[in-house]
Amino acid sequence: MSATLRGAVPSEATTLDRPLAAEYSPWRASHRLANRLANVPPFPRPTQVLNLNIGGIGLPLQCLGIGTYVQQLAVTMFLPLVIAAAILFGFVLHSCYRSEGTGEGLMAALPSLLSLTFLVFPMVSSAAFRAFSCESFDGGQSFLRADYSLECDTTEHTVAKGLALLGILTYPVGISLLYILLMLRARRALRDERPTKLSQALSFLVRVLTATLNSAS
Image (cartoon, rainbow, N blue to C red; front, side, top):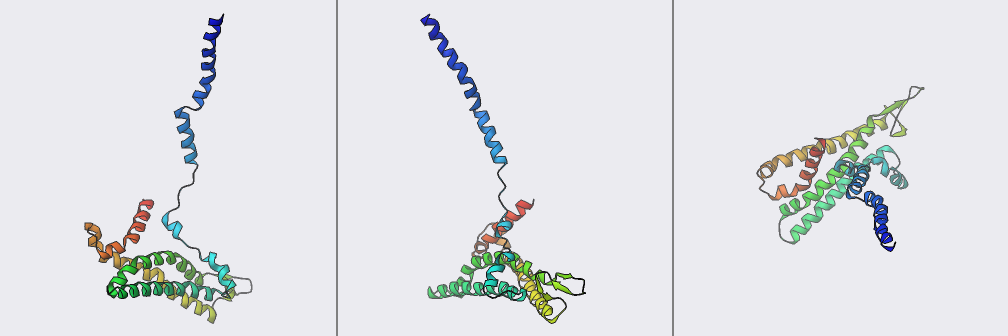
């Protein structure tokens, strides 16, 4: 009798352990992990992370008394230039202090300046092109969608469009030409994989463009 009980205990324990073993088998664990990973949202692209929205700074600018579209566009356009001048002045001053020359300071400032241009490029571009979007109403008047206090086809609107054209020439056109000229200047070093000071300074731009092209393909 005792021998029978002793033989029955292991078989009962084995029967009870089978569902647990099947539930926590490596195959089921990996299957659950794969299902959870499939529900994780994809990482944003570099261009999406760095893309700034001009609408997000509208409220702080209004708190500073900069409420009209022309005022906000002017701040959006000229504030990055002031920041760039401060960065450039700091690097050149540091280079001159170390007796390395102005050229070394300009080359040292280039990565920071490129990062700044990449950040402000979409912000200023979207703000500038809004100067040409008007909405017509029943009375025959049309107002700027970005600022309904500004009537289109007026002197104030002409000033806004002139400022916007300056912003478009400076940022979308000017920065694009700057990128092209710098890449052409460093094309041999990048192609032959022989780093120079310029190609090393362009490493941020090269990484971003490579990641953008890979994500697009």
